[in-house]
Image (cartoon, rainbow, N blue to C red; front, side, top):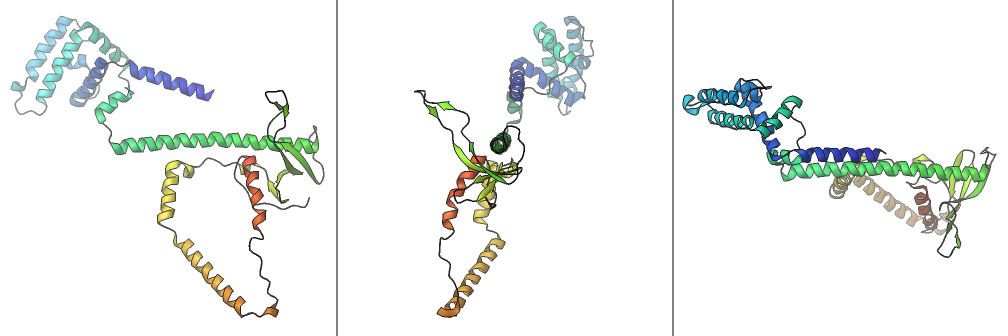
Length: 320
């Protein structure tokens, strides 16, 4: 619904912007220039010293009188005398033209719009490449942040749905919590589906453990990964494309002193460890762990995060 109202607002805005004609833009320019030169609130009628209901004959008389006063020959050395005289001629022409005057009277009564279309401002200000880049960067980053927010809400709903299915399977339809842990299977693939031939297709079933109000994914090695709202990734400005690009370039080309110092300290500790182990005899009782002993436990943990729709948390091993 919000998206519908947003699209409707954009459509109305575009329609309004496209409604201004070339003549309207000319009136906008004249109104802005007249107020800048003669003072804010000055109108075509007040500058000619006539009423808004004046006839074309009255406007012509007022124009002749005003033109004598503003003629450049009468104002030698006055800054802006030529511009004021030229502006007077254009304003008088608009007020003596029936259609042009009717258009000006509309803005005279309702006010000149603040938003006059992108084409109007572009032709006046001519934004440079830097301005365009900044605008596009802010726009795309804002849109990306909006997408992150939508995905975050979707992940929260997915987590809530999975937790509800696990509790329903463990506690029954009454959802009365039981004592101890209960291992259940939850279908992540949705409801029953059928292929083109009418054969039923099973969803994606995973093992889960319900312990009181806590729900856990069961990994292939038996470890438990909690499933709650913290598994969903909240929106963050740091994860927008421009901030991420700047951060990655900074970390790549300018490594922090802290990490460098930690690495060197770690290397010194390893060297000291090797030297100490080399002096120990066979009967010292030192046990050297085999490399890769814990490697087999990390392979099956990647699937749990994608199932929950978010980031991983440190595994919590519980007795089953």
